[in-house]
Image (cartoon, rainbow, N blue to C red; front, top):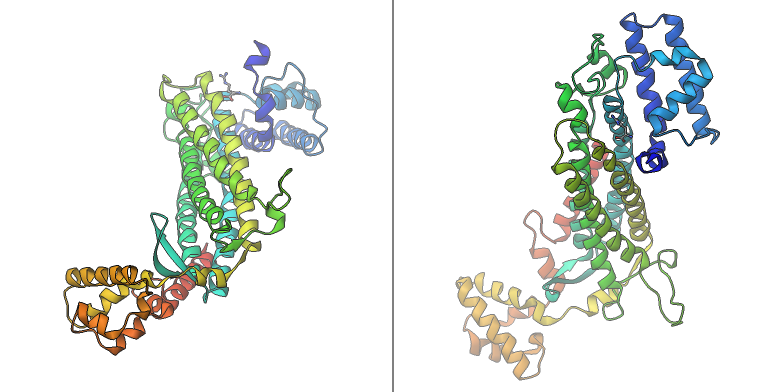
Length: 442
Ligand code: ARG
């Protein structure tokens, strides 16, 4: 039961958060006159020594240490003597653990946000540097319309941007103080909770003690945020895995982010991207597993809540790893813009052909039909659309003129899509500018 009950094996990574929270609580007890200045100083200094032991790898965990909270207090008592027994006055592990988790997660979330911003920066740099590269855009994985490679890269950068915005909004909700809630009913010694919040740089105080000790919405929200972000990274990985396949050959991963085959000498496998895609599954699993644990709990603290930690820790580790690997992949891959261009086909301009007639006043529904007949004519006569004669075009509609030849220009097609958000050079560069301005502001 002792081994089954213990969480020290995984929650020890919160050692710094636990020490930080305890030092603030010692100061809070001092303000209430429950500790002399001398006692408070002894506790704060002793906790610094506990932290130093963790930092140096010198902290010896005993079999009787159930969790990080009891371990730190046990060691504090060994270092400073009986005064350590005053630290837990009016406090419970219930408000302590909720506080430690929030302290720990807010700084991990900041680190993950910084990783995400680095990834977006790489995407923006690539988009600007490779603005000239054009490629087929796909729907249903079928060639659809020509687009800029930079537009494709930024499409993913925009979902990462949304992820970053959401995470930045979530951090203040993580950063609410439970300490001073006691076990459930509140603190009997009148500790000044707003002062503790200020001491620990929390954004606010949780206004109900029952809620303070039982709420793990910040964990659930972070796990959902992580799941959505991993979903985006997974879809981006899938795109690049497809584009790196020989049949496409649009991108080539750096050797550092690929592996060979143990059997086939010619292979270069996109393991980095496949692992990012694969790990999205376990992050999703962490979220659904935790929500399953969370949903049936009666108020307030129940030991089930100890099960919030492993899914959260695993998620944080995998998110940080995946975002950094994605950044490495994106900053080192090479594009083959010749292959991208060579994959463009005339029929991808069939929409432009319809638009040519639209500009001459023919209703779009009709032009769509006429351009469809041009596609069929090209297929039946085994002639690329751009090689159909003007007579053939005129047989489809009298408003076709010699200037229809201008339609068969991929750049022209791309640069006509110049309404905000389109793939034209200018509107892609506008996106670069917009993202750069945002990056400079966060
Ligand atoms: N290790 C516990 C957890 O992670 C700490 C809180 C224990 N509280 C209690 N009343 N048993 O949730």
